[in-house]
Amino acid sequence: MIEQPSTPGQVPLSGSVEESGGSAPAKWAGAGFSTRAIHAGSEPDPRTGEVVPAIHVASTYKQDGVGGLRSGYEYSRSGNPTRDALQECLAAIEQGASAYAFASGLAAEDTLLRSVLDPGDHVVIPDDAYGGTYRLFSKVLTRWGVDHTPADLGDLDAVRAAVQPGRTKLIWAETPTNPLLTISDIAGTAEIAHAAGARLAVDNTFATPYLQNPLTLGADVVVHSTTKYAGGHSDVVGGALVVGQDDGLAEAIAFHHNAMGAIAGPFDAWLVLRGLKTLAVRMERHCDNAEAVAAWLLEHPKVTAVLYPGLPDHPGHDVAMQQMRRGGGMVAFRTGSAETALEVCARTEVFTLGESLGGVESLVEHPGRMTHASTAGSVLEVPDDLVRLSVGIEDVEDLLGDLERALG
Image (cartoon, rainbow, N blue to C red; front, side, top):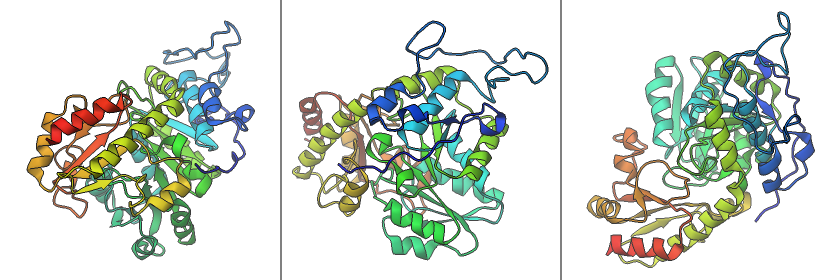
């Protein structure tokens, strides 16, 4: 485990359209992670005393005279109390200044990219990025005049070589990456980005705010698919952006959050907020089980490679252990052939065959034909013998027994 830097100063929440993101309450700045996750954004209601935030479903709010807003609320696209509660919590646990909740992780990504890029700009992306992210860059942003260069973000020299002076405005990192679990040196990548006049965005979905806080390591903005570990129960789709001490970036995101309108609905925001309260205890169990699964797979004769940052022989292990508490709940392995990989996916019973990740239940998938099918034929194409596991919180003996049957 590593000691994370202290919480940055906070930006007050005004409730206006331009500053509609939730800020981390200073009251919880010095508290531990679980205390922040449980209490930030969830103060007891002053009228009823209820300890769980209400689900505010109103679309519009009565004004006391033209422009006389109560607590800054006028229309729920611009601001909603339930969404604000989630945003305050996200800012607190990521040690950021402000947060913004979206309808999906890709909606968060799209809003960020439109907030910071102009036609003619250039972005460095991982050469093993999530398929949906790659699709957004290759199929959407290229038509908007934004170029991208895939690079090995686990190699700082490769990152430097990919930067185009004067054009590169953003480096996009995932660490660990999806699905190959490559590790980026966040602090080193931030130095490269800032020296080039660019910003660093880090997709922290796999690591979660419990295991890693990129903003404290120099990143400018953190991206989450809150569908995954943040929600934690495979019952909600959502996304989030958390900004550090960059008022200009926060203002741009807040404007586009409202102008583009891909906001999290109140019930979705409430589900994610509920999930965050148990994130720490869930991640400890996810990590315990993933470590056991990775160690077991290493010894299996049908497994040709195991990809898990918690393993000492993982190429990014040392960096991961410097910036992460533990190795996480995701494990990938190779079987030597696509046929064997597909057979494993078909035979599991405790591991459910399905896309997504981060829920309490274990999932298995074949990235090449499922989540990363959009990378086929590109430099980001994943190996066809790769199997990805989202290791849940079931009894580990049952998980190992399931894998033994599937590989047998």
